[in-house]
Length: 345
Image: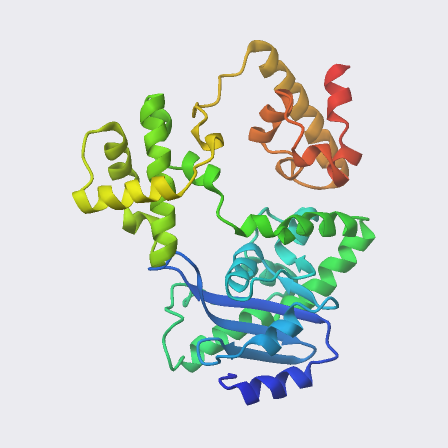
């Protein structure tokens, strides 16, 4: 395991001509708002290495390699790894080959795990016994280090097999389109609308209480970020709704802090739009949905992919109701599925 800057620089020199890097990370997020990166595992060529992020202060040389325009990340289920590295580096990779996404385009099980895919492609069974390990522990036991290395050991062979299959089935461009969505920096910034909509009970209270609840959600998020604590540690959803509806009152100190936050922060009126649950489908919408599902199923059989990958049931309802910002309206999906013209006919 690399634990010093001199070791890191020596390692980076040894892989300077490698542009294809298999990457995995181990991080902790039990008691913090932001993920705390603890370990980075890299497979490059025939080398396997663990980098102790907690032990090395200057990671800039590593970031220069990871975020070089020529570097391609090979990674399984990339989103959380990208986020953990983004929080530390404030940078995004130039290109990623996500083996989970690649597998889904080839009709392997949706969201297939790395362990399951390794067994399918390499006939190798990987243990899962350290999935809940505290990665801040030092020193790391040998079997834990081996477990971490195994998480990248088979990624480059996976890449070779899956890429060949994607080329053969003319889906490699689909893969780059899908992974391109993961390279949007906004994906890793705080999504307030999503947080508000996921707040338990907020859609069931009256509009005035909703406005207060949204103010409290924004304050809670701001406090959680500043203190680097999970939002539920600052205030549970249940307590937040009770404060918003007047069932309980904030303490005098909390009230002062809340009022100070409101006076110094302008909360967008977009967040104060009425929160309503999805309207039930009309008879005509139900018919269109059934027709669309039957059509998508035929397309999915033709291209050997899961229907859900083309369009989820939830997005299908949005499509029927005129949402133009869906993935089915662009890229490879729009080329193989002419859903709008099919429903008209």
